[in-house]
Image 1 (cartoon, rainbow over the protein chains, first blue to last red):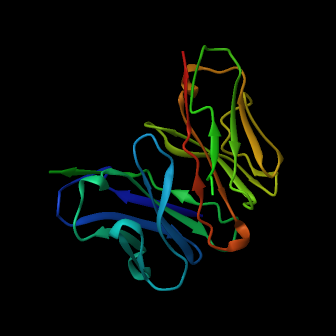
Image 2 (cartoon, rainbow over the protein chains, first blue to last red):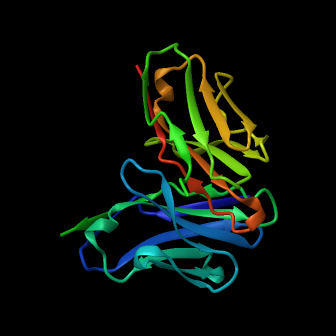
Image 3 (cartoon, each protein chain N blue to C red):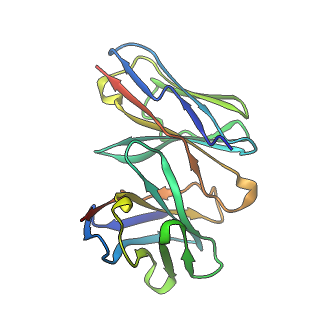
Length: 114
Length: 115
């Protein structure tokens, strides 16, 4: 069984500030981990993924995430927020030894203030 | 690459009517997923196909919902009869299980409103 917990349904930052979106997972086997972004009235779009290679993963739009097995975490960061980063962000985990159907977190809405 | 295509983008219907949502996955992808997104429940997996065969439909809410995938390039999700509580955004996503990367590609969604 696998699960994902995203701490904070809303995160508010000022433009230019650090973005930190938290994701903790539970998985009985080595996981694949993903972050997706959803802009208003659009589908989810892959930001980045961890598939057991480098633990620090770089994605699109300046985002990156670090896989920390000891903390069962995969937090998403960006050094400097931009207004265009305002969106809903979803963390997901896949079971690498079973059906690989991903389990999604409830999402975190990122609000960026000018 | 046209991405995952869904139609219609918006659907407004009256309670009791039949609704059919359509999806064309990315060419070459062999897995297809139907999701429902609401404020209350978040993103819910309804059904998953692999190589056109339904593998897991445990998320289908009730018998009013049915899904088919007659070939690798087309899938439908049907609701009959529709109810106001079915109002949601329905997403189709596809992936290539053979690539072992497992990421999903989502369509733009169909916003369904049942009055």
